[in-house]
Image 1 (cartoon, rainbow, N blue to C red):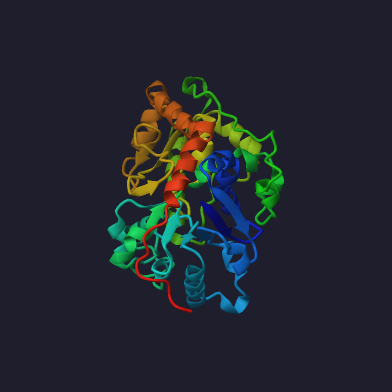
Image 2: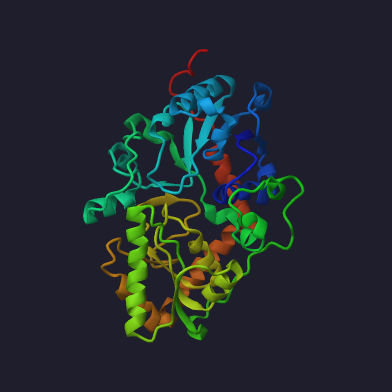
Length: 385
């Protein structure tokens, strides 16, 4: 199986973590006869002999000339690629499960995302924002927000093309936490994903989940995204309720931002609970930092989501709360008052996360990749040139 990923050399923070397992688990992939190459300049020769071509969203758009970055031109490019190779799989690395380029789906053989909605028929419904939890606050709280009407609902026939690939949890956050250059917004990251290998010093630093011995109670250091009204409400509501709880109790709550990565992780490792609302999408870097730090992850209910690895098993690896915050304080206080009861959840979340980063986790990733890359039967023929 020969795979070509079309991308730009300069990766975003998110891009790096999504692509990381392809490098970290390269040996396991080779053992399954999976060969992955990264293509930075699009030409027919670069795709010669490839079974699957994966245009990588985001910075991939820079492969197109400035005058050819419209949706129509992207569709035309996908149609041309389908004449050259057996399969074209678009990789949409956007944060949210609900945010899909619906007009593009029928022009590729498979549409991959780090996370998708568990109930696929939800993609057939016209949305306001394109993001399910943002729509929720728009409808229940009357909050005006951005629209994504141009995406529209997805055709029923296109739903089978949509697949959950793998999420950013496989990105090993210790890599970027320990290297200040990788934390910059735009860096030539390929040095760290290329053939020279990853520095041996980068490794996870799991902290023993002994909750009773932790001097702090809650950590919530967050960007409130003031430019996104529904996201801002959702995140600010968590901060408002935590501040009110801290003001009337003796709980040690850490709020606000401006903490260096090493200090942030050290603080998190001393807290019993890490609160992690949704961001621009459902999954947050904080989720995985919480697992590594051995804290109990308190997060909005994730039952609508299909993602892999499945880190989010309610009551087993994390504690869910309602999107309307109706049981937020009840859940939080119960954890703080009975830490011994919840320590098993902190341990299970950490173990599942660490296991995904292990050699055995690499074996599962390679099996997942092989299954995802299985060539589908095309619906009709590629457009004629």
